[in-house]
Image (cartoon, rainbow over all chains, first blue to last red; front, side, top):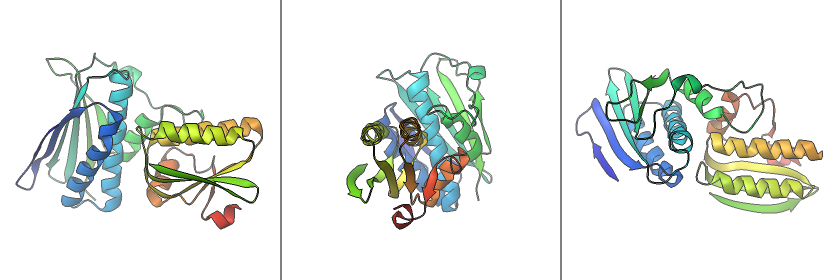
Amino acid sequence: MAETRAARPGGLLLQRRFPARPSELRSVREAVRREALAQGCAPDCAGDVVAAVDEACQNIIRHAYAGREGGEIVLELERAGEELLVSLRDFAPPVDPSRVRPRDLDDLRPGGLGTHLIRELMDGAGFAPPPPDGGNLFRMSKRIR
Amino acid sequence: MEHSVREEADAVVAAFSGDVDLESSPRARELLLGLVRGGRKVLVDLSAVDYIDSSGVASLIEAFQAARRGGTGFALVAPNPAALRVLQLARLDRVFTIHATLGDAL
């Protein structure tokens, strides 16, 4: 796992490349929480960012990679003004953003909550244009509170 | 994630601790479905759960639906504020029976 941390306030805070596996997510959550709190997020706000990153990684593991082994995720967390910006890059076949929809919450069933939660937890979230060398790029933002 | 199971009055209490996430939620799911199939009221003690995500919530939903189909009781006990927030965002705080304490539930 490769990780770099910024030595100065603002800009890139965290960059981590890690296997797209459920067992990696706990460590990722801890790193994101640490950085969000260090940037002045209140615990609730940091918790929201952590949860959104976790849910977005779950989507990559379960859907982009469809549970296949060997995939990787690149997480970048940066500060821009009073916002935290998250980007998650995978190397899976292109996802069709129009098919990524939060489900109707009145339809009680086990799946489909992740996308809804991400949109509730973050101020902005969505797919960016895919990188030229393949994969998908998902970005989220939240104002520091 | 750790778990313990014990019997209290007419119910069985499943207590989880730590993180109920994509890694551990399959175990939570299997445990809860097994307990529901046992036919007794199931109380899920979340007081020691630090973090629960959509996969953990999905496990709760599945067990809740199995209990409903079987006509047995199912309730959550003492979710912490972060867990309650996830349940509220998913609008499940009105679907699940949620007790603040185990005493309330029994």
